[in-house]
Amino acid sequence: MTGFESALPETPGEPPLFLRTREPGEASDRSDHSYPPLPEALVVPVYDNHTHLEIANGSEPDGGGSLDYHEQLDRASAVGVRGVVQVGTDLETSRWSAEQAAREPRMLAAVALHPNEAPVYAEAGGLDDALAEIFELAGWPRVRAVGETGLDFYRTTTDEARATQYRSFEAHIEIAKENGLALQIHDRDAHAEVIATLKRVGAPERTVFHCFSGDAELAEICTENGWYMSFAGNVTFKNANNLREALSVAPRALIMVETDAPYLTPMPFRGRPNAPYLIPHTLRAMAAHLGTDVSMLAAQISSNTELVYGSWSDEPVTAS
Ligand SMILES: [Zn+2]
Ligand SMILES: [Zn+2]
Image (cartoon, rainbow, N blue to C red; front, side):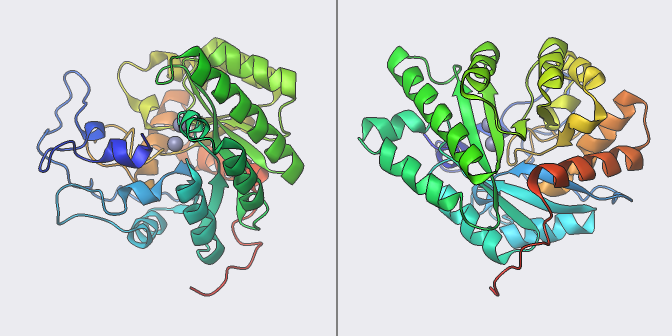
């Protein structure tokens, strides 16, 4: 199942799964599926280094509130989110990401087969061809990362499918290194295995744990290896003390911020659709937890993000 399909309502009129969860005690209205209001603009801008704009593009369920990706980027610009890394999860979304980034100055792209998609390609006998196309897309000028790739032992449970995940992850690591690109890792219930794979194969110079889901111990391992930790909206959730402890021990030079939109909408809007313009909530919660100034943290994160992916403006975009 692709992320897109999993975001669709199971039956017409019902909200998609990602809109159905909420924090215990959270005051959000389960019937409200509209996009949250614009937050107060950031003084110092940041980037959303992991988002899936194509999922929100047309799947927002309230009928009147669907935002296409241009509107999402306009809202982001209005609140100080100056650019995004648009992330592919299969061939179709990786192509789309590379194509849109080629003509949208606020977008860079990441291309990959998601760890839960790799077994689907393998079953159809098309994994090698698909990896070859990811390699080709990785050469496009505004494709700056290979991802999201990695291991997902939560949704992929059979030995055979996990063996395919390993093969795909290792191939993506090589694609990143051969193209001099950053690597965006999806690690779900597989911390030790992800670390062992990175060490065995050799991690790319710029390696990012997207939607960092570990504790302080994993943050220390990332720190020792110079791997980046990108925090998503779940760092604001009440039950996420482990993530906040990780944030506390992570060096500021290795921290980034993302939405993973349309999932993981930050508090106080958990349960409603997510989009890059909601990054300020996550950033402000991170700054509050760290006891630091929002603008100082934003400046640090912007600089980290440009070190990892390069500048959003140094490759000309073609006219759309
Ligand atoms: Zn992921
Ligand atoms: Zn993602």
